[in-house]
Structures are given as structure tokens and as C-alpha cells.
Length: 127
Image (cartoon, rainbow, N blue to C red; front, side):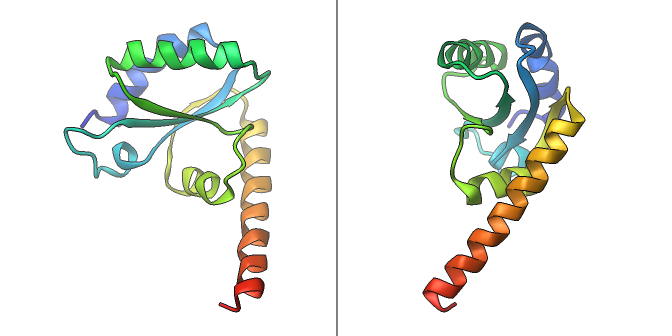
């Protein structure tokens, strides 16, 4: 397991090279302290403006910085899985915050949509 501070330290030069990353989280087993020796690293970033090329460059830069051969990288402002996004917001650890307003707006909107989704699902499934 790699510590949160170690992940933050290793990724610091990556964030400098990618100013379009407005905020980022560490989530999953590494963030919760449940990681084992074979666990990957899960990162989530708000990438604005988004380009697929920059996403791939960011992914490669993170792998190099973390000295890993596997990692999950979620682009928050492109993801559609509300449950995943809610879990990242609630359980993830903030690695970077360049734009507090954008993060706040994203979190509020996402949590509101997730709440609506849960209510709609409850009504449909009767649970």
C-alpha cells in the first residue's frame, strides 16, 4: 500500500504539467486503507477542457509518477455512473484542488442527481 501523502507527493509534478486538472481524488482501497500488495490505484480527475489525447497523456504520466503498471483513472466530468461518482465524493480523499468553486458545484450537483436517482430507483423497484 502506498500512503496518501506519498501518492500526493509523486503526483505533484504531474499536476504542474496538466493545468486542465481542476481537482482530483484518490479513491478505492488505497484511500480507505484496505489496499493489499496487488491493489491498483484509483484516481478521479476533473479535466477541463477535456480531450482524449490529454487524458491518455495524463494517464501515462500518472503511471510513470506512481511507478505502477495498472491504475484506474476516472474523468469526473465525463463519467455517467452516479453511484460511482457519489462514492468518489463521499469516500475519496482530495489530492488536488485548483478550483474550489468548480469542485463545490460538481459535488453539489452530483450528490443531488444521485439522491434523485436513488429515490427514482426506490419508487420503480418498490424498495
